[in-house]
Amino acid sequence: MTTQQNLSIAHKWFDAFNNHNLEQLLSLYDEDAEHFSPKLKIKKPETNGLVQGKQALHDWWQSAFETIPTLHYRVTSLTADANRVFMEYVRTVENEPDMLVAEVLEIKEGKIVFSRVYHG
Image (tube, rainbow, N blue to C red; front, side):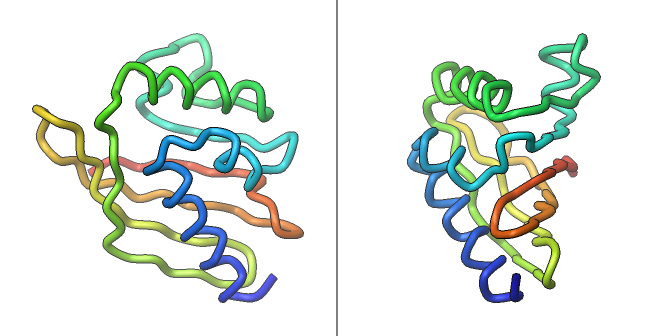
């Protein structure tokens, strides 16, 4: 993958996420993709913060979209190379303080295979 192709995936990711379009979001991921998030670790301690596979990703994000309908990410920076995209964004939710977030998408053959989130 080229840097531009990976940046395109990141833009599609934000578009799908901010529109709460779960199917579009999941289409960017490999079937066996893994996702790590500190919020996941808190809300589902049995996962130790890691989910694997599209069904687990579906369940995690569907719950988020249903319970936090005003969830929105505002991009502040995207940096990419041939294998990954480093995304910085602000998590906004109505009646909550904004949260600085960094997320790395590992990409192989045009699909996200691993993503990990860091909160500021």
